[in-house]
Length: 245
Image 1 (cartoon, rainbow, N blue to C red):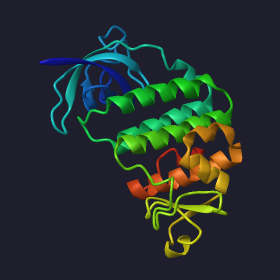
Image 2 (image 1 turned 120 degrees about the vertical axis):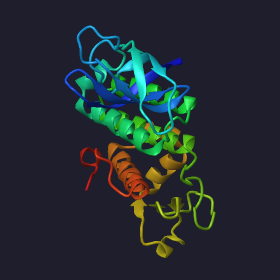
Image 3 (image 1 turned 30 degrees about the vertical axis):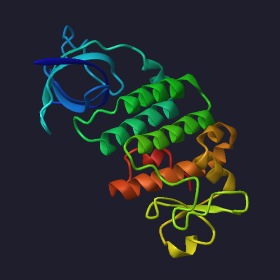
Image 4 (image 1 turned 90 degrees about the horizontal axis):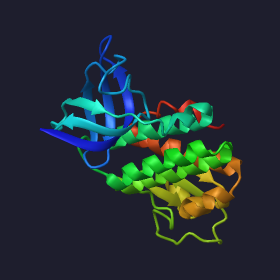
C-alpha cells in the first residue's frame, strides 16, 4: 500500500551509483527513512538526486518500525534553493535539519513542527542579515523543543520557581535544571551558562528576539548549542559554525 504526503529531506546518503537512502520529514507520517532507488538517474520518478531541503509531495510504502520504506515518487520543488545563496542561512537550515533528525522519533507525526520547519526555512532564506537569521534560528529551536515536549523553563527560575523579572540582575541557563536559573539559585548548579538579562528576557519572550543585538543573539545561541550538546551527549555537527567565544 502506498501513502502520499508532503515531505522535506533532512539527510541524503548515496547507496549506489544510482540510488540513495534518504531521511524525510513528512507532515502526517513523521520522520521516515527511505530507499530511493534510481533517484540519481536523470529521468527518475524523484526528479533527480535528492538533497537536504528537497521539498514536495512524496509517494512511499507504509513505513515499517525502524525500517526502510521505499520511495516511489518525489516531485521536488525549488522552494528552498535561495538557501544556498547565503552561507549562514544555509548553515542555519542544516543545523535545524540536524536537530530535527536527532530529536524526533521515526514514524511519529508532528504536523505543527513540520509546518514550523518549512516556515523557518522560508524566513531564514528571505533575510540577509546575520542577526535576523540568528533570531529565526533561536525561535525555531525553542519551537522544536516545545513541539517534542521538552521545552525549557524560561518564564521563571527552573529551581525555585521565582518569576523572571527586572529585579534579576542576570540569569543563567542550565541544561541540568532544564531552564533559567535566578541569581539566588545558580550556585547550586555547576553546569550553566551566564546570560545577559536582556538575552534572558528574549528567551522568555521570543517575540523580543528580533529586537536584541547580534552579540546577545550569539550569547543565546551558545546557550542553545550547549543545551543540545547536553541532550545529545555530543555537540551538533554544525556547532563550529555558530559557537562564539
